[in-house]
Length: 409
Image (cartoon, rainbow, N blue to C red):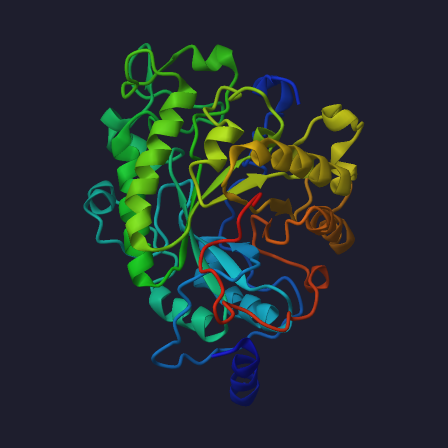
């Protein structure tokens, strides 16, 4: 069913030189710009709440749109009334995909899982969307591409319940980061197999793409990491080698599912000439995945990066320079992943991020030929003025290559 037809039914029924990460990253940490939100008011903007009908069977939406224009939905937004507000927003605008938390960085799952490890560790104890399958059918009815986000290495629940899979402290017990979170061991392949098992279940439920986040080691100062032990580390293996090895494993486990294998990575990977102590190196990433999503949030770049005095106030230049570096480094590698940047749709420091500043980021990416993007707002609250009116078509055109758009090809 086309999105235009879905609208009619609705109307009728109504993320440089070698960089020290500790030196570059402020105390908040990359990807940790705000704490996980509690259940919040379901509507922050004046979009009327509606109950959307579910039509059975829903039409298939197996492949991504040729151009993905997505917003992130935390588990509470996906499971609450705001979900319907955001579907209505997508019907009116260019949005054609939702990135939905299946497992966030608490370790708890959005819906009840039958994966044995999830059951064993109690990951089903804080369910946020008990009717996930019905909500996924609503997305397909409205031509919205559903993407499952699964956090891998930052899983304090798994770390506490499976200490043998976790980063250890030299003095005994679990090692913890500066915010007192325990991490699982990125060298341990069981951690990655668990993520792949959750992905398989998500695809069977109706998600059409899997996006793995925190495919890395903790971003902590060396002084703190000095007390960390990684029991899963192989002899002489570096962090970069450990991440590359387990990304290969994750790809092998995801490929049979018939959906794109996508990964979220630090924004600085596009420019840094080291793995920054977290194991992520651009050339490794873009030759491992179908889609790589660098989180190039301007608020996360420190003064002086790209010779900018205040990167957060120069969103166009930050995105343009970061993406230029990404494209330049991918070009000599042959066939590489599609680059789909995560862009900032939240305020952290000055200035306040208005729709104009969000559009400046989109413009910078699109001028370089990168027409797919995802907007991140941790509370899943998006000003409708950010978005252009609905694009004329969604999904795959007849005869179109079902793979994601090639990154540098």
